Amino acid sequence: MLPPGLQYEEKRLQALRRHDILDTPPESEYDDIVQLAARLCEVPMALVSLVDRERQWFKANVGLPGVSETERCISFCTFAIEQEQILVVEDATQDVRFATSPLVTSAPFIRFYAGVPIQSEDGFHLGTLCVIDSKPRTLTEAQRQGLLALKRQVELHLRLRIQVRQAQARNRQLLESSSDAVFVLDEAGRVVEVNPVAGRLLGLSPPQLIEASFVSLAPEGERESLGRALQDLLVRGSVRLENQGLLSARGERVALDLSASLQEVGSARRLLVVGHDLTEKRRLEQQSIQNDRLASVGALAAGIAHEINNPVAYVLSNLSYLERWRDDLERQLAATPGFPAHVADLLVEAKEVVSESLDGCKRIRDIVRDMRFFSHAPDESLAPVDINASLDFVLRMAQSELKRTARLEKDYDLALPPVFSTESRLSQVFLNLVINALQAMPSGGPQRHTLRVRTAREGEHVRVDVSDTGHGIPPEVLPRIFDPFFTTKPAGSGTGLGLSISHSLIQKMGGEMRVRSEPGNGTTFTLLLPLGERVVDPRTVLAS
Image (cartoon, rainbow, N blue to C red):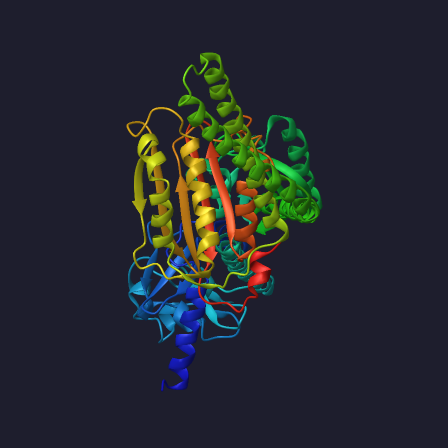
């Protein structure tokens, strides 16, 4: 354990370090104070001296050009910081503490010294404000009081320095930990600092944003109102802007709710702007609307599926009977001598008509089956599902179409843990995504197109990406792709229920389905599926 005196000294040095001021460049605030002190006391030399462990370092210096520090062991200030009031040495040659000091016997030949301790906010003496002369002199009471007033100004600047560092630390913490976009602006509205969220949101790196006018980041039609808000901020201290747009690197409008406050950072002022991304909020609102739509479709499906299914079953049965009857008739007539050619032609035509009718009825049956998913699902048990194996099964099912359309690239996490779900339903989702991807790559073949399937673990989820190099999805269509019966395929090529069913099923498993697309460059569907066994009623997961 350190002796009491050494304990104090260690704490004093810690207080000095907290100010982070040693070996910093000159600052006009401190230079002005020593100039005033020298004039006030009518001396040629004045210092703001900070006493370190082995040296005294001069933050401000008048009258000692080229000198930034001296050894502590020969300094006057070492004695001054032990005082509570001003230490005055009228003639150093007559004071046994200093008479033999090299500062007295050689340059700068100190004879007169007066130093007042500079105190930290927690009471430690960090150094002195001192005045020096090379000839003996005294201080008047007015000079003493003036010197005390000036040292209080030094203390004020030191405290402001601490406050600035604390403000910077708070801003840094906000920048690093905030889930919102954070911009720090100077008074002119230029960006001086941003957090990673802001960069990701706009698709720009921090160096691309630094020095940019914040107003210039807004769409042209919104710049004037944003500029007025920043001017108001300088006067009022805080402003809020709802649904303010900023432009991403791709020229897309990113909607934000902005909260801005004025920060005093020493003699400078900073504008702290925090932007809450409205994309997620709108996504949740759209999802709520989507859920309502799905519920409505489910209620509708429950009422009409039975009404449609029975008549379709009759028609399919009768058409199948008619097809077999026609085939039998054709065989019998073919064996009959003198079978008229025009009758044979009629039978061929009848075969085509019956075949088309069967295809149409089967399509109606498939639509009804998919619609019934919204109102009822079979009682299937939940179990651990090997995602990689399930994907391989689906890719084998789609092999004939795949080999004609695209090259397959698989990037599986071989250590992927299982997902607790229903394999048949997940396979249904995977197959829908794979078929959609292949249909999005209609021409060019494997030489031009690639189907990429990737799995990975992300925290407590398994991620599945299905990507194509097809034509992509137009931005105006993206918000509707999960709507029931919505399709961009040609008439007769799709029911418009595949993605809706898949999206609904993944959500009810506690997962998430995302889509990212760029016209001309393809589409990626991403599934996030929760890991591990959960206590879930299968009917909740599998039924609408």
